[in-house]
Structure formats: structure tokens, C-alpha cells
Image (cartoon, rainbow, N blue to C red):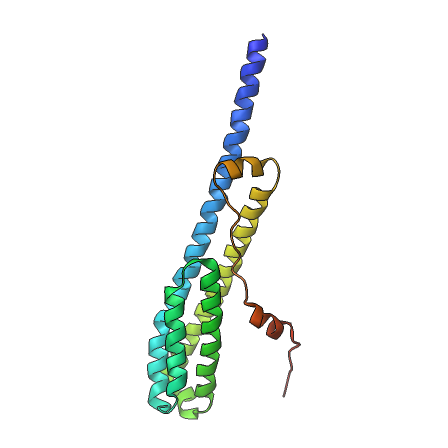
Amino acid sequence: MTIYYIIGAILLLVAIIASMYNGLVKINTRVDEAWSDITVQLKRRTDLIPNLINTVKGYAKHEKEVFEQVTEARSGLMNAQGVAETAKAENAFQQTLKSLFAVAEAYPDLKANESFQQLQTELVDTEDKIQASRRFYNGSVRDLNVKVKVFPTNIFANMLGFKVREFFEVAESEQAEIQKPVEAKF
């Protein structure tokens, strides 16, 4: 009779460990999927940029420095490896895009150009998708990190090679800008 209790306890322990492992695999896969979503959207945006630059170039030929900065930031984003490096490149790219749109503001004919408006709409749509992908990724990373850190899963997570993952965060340089109150001017 005691042999049945021992076998039952062993089977219960195996079931608990298998359940923890499967949960970790599931969440880890979700994090990988979320990261893939981010890279797809970043790639889509970097593919739109040459068209945007060419459209703006036709109107603002003397803004060479801005075009070079955008091209350089785009290249940096495309070559970034890992979460931290990609987040840093993404933030730099965002800043150069702002300067490109500032140039566009100085040219009313450009702002009225249908091609430019379409590219701008596609970029806004892509930015929304990037933000949604970042939120999904960070939520998945949060879930994985909690699982990896809580007892008793943390024991098995460490033994099985599951690690805490990095969040895709806003750069420290942008933190001050985000925390500033918004000025509404009419």
C-alpha cells in the first residue's frame, strides 16, 4: 500500500514539474512571438522611410543634413541586435523622424502632396502598430519574468535555463519629455 503512495507522490511531483515547465515554455514562446511582431513593424517602417525621404527631397533639396541623419538612424535601427540596442536605435530613429517632419512643415506644397500624405498616414499606422507590439511584448516579458522569479517555479526555471528578459523601454533621454505637462495652444 505504501508503494502506491510513493508512486502517487512521484507522479504528482512529475506532473507539477511538467506543468511548470510547459507554462514557462508557453510564456517564453509568447515573448519570442511578441519580439518578432516588433521587428516586423520596425522593418515595415524602415521600408517606408526611403520613399518618404525621396518625396521630401523633391521639395527640400537644401536639407541634406536631415536626410543623412534619417538615413543613418534607419541604418542603425536595421543593424541593431537585441532588445536594449534596438530600443536605443528606435529612440534615435524617432528623433530624426521628428526633424524630417519639421522640415516638411516648412513646405506647404509638400504637406499638400498626396504621396507625402499617404506616406505620413502609413507611418502613423505603423507607429500605432509598433506601440501595440511594444505593449504586448512588455506584457509578455512581465509574465515571463514573474514566473521565472516566483517560488517554486524559479527553482526549475533556473535549472532549465529560463532567464529574465529585458523590457523594451523608452530611453532615459525621453523620460523627461514624456513627464512634461502638455501645453495646449489655440
